[in-house]
Image 1 (tube, rainbow, N blue to C red):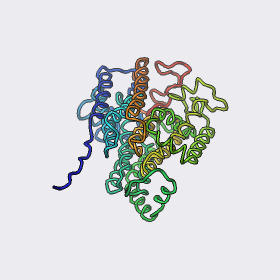
Image 2: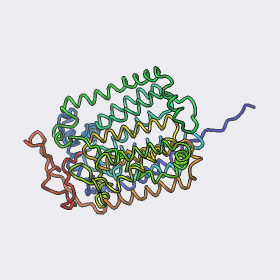
Image 3: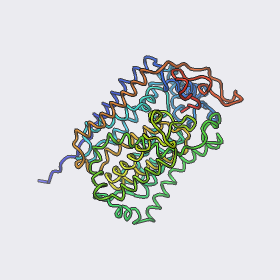
Image 4: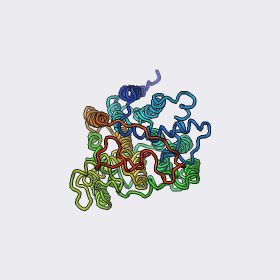
Length: 491
């Protein structure tokens, strides 16, 4: 009789369904009850809902030349179509907007499904998905009309295409198309192109690599430079439509934001590396069970890499200020904790150590993954950090979703889960993080003050580009006088 092969494990959708159920049960009652409290409701009422309704009134030719959002208009256009063709009821629009978050959960769940017998069990996958669902920035964007999760959905699509073990037409054409759609939603997300180019340079994974060895990595990366350059050229060619989208808006706006926000989104922030590393280090502590083998390798075989990582972390920590400063765009989230602690020389005693820890744990993640995965994940980290350097507003709600996506994808891709801590610990640690994030999200909703929309005045009717919600003379409801005003809040 012919030899019978063991069946491949059937991917389970149960973790994804659980995460969607948790999100829907928590978010939809807020939507259906007309809950309008807190930062998410404020941004919806004074910015994004205004844009959606304006585009719906202008349908089928929405005017993209100037509007009340600092992002490209893809998200608002999609919801304007719903408002024009289905219903412009606020609850209907919010329910339609929550579909982006559900799609984000589905796509992430697909990215976590096991490809082999030692892939993440269902309980592990469920815990990892709940980490993202319970995050305040992710949950807020799922309840209110905020474009963030639509952007992260596009980022994740490009990310998973880049991580495919085969570099083929799907990666080239799918990656280019996904990047073009992504840039139509959020222009700052050009950085995923770095992942696609890294994937192109590395090519298709042809063999299972053993334990991390930098010499072997460099040999594999540089073995066939002609083929790598050819694949990279194809990837750049497929990305030209995405670059054309960015160029078209640059020409239309004479900058990277609609004209009304031009003076409010200027300059960069070179504290981005220390902040991204600090947030990464803080949340990576809850993923230590996935890094047992990587930390062992760093300590016993790759001390040089650990020393280099710590040096990079120290350099980033002391090269730029890390104290709380509304004038410098460093407030909200972790910055608020740093505000309550000493900051000698404008260097936070909280942020600096977390950044150093983050750099060390990034090295542990690096050696824990397969060759192709680790270089693509490193390209994601470097690319996102560089993009944040170009943004003046260094807020945690821009950084946290990226860090959590990185950690969740990384946890599903550690080289050999069997050498890590037991399944129980790999469930418990992210589950504790998810509970903590859920508690913070719930507390923020409980303490939020009601908000109301202000009268809309078209940007071209103002001599000075100050829009509703940007009035520095009026604090946002629920804000103390010593807290930052919502000036320029638009995305």
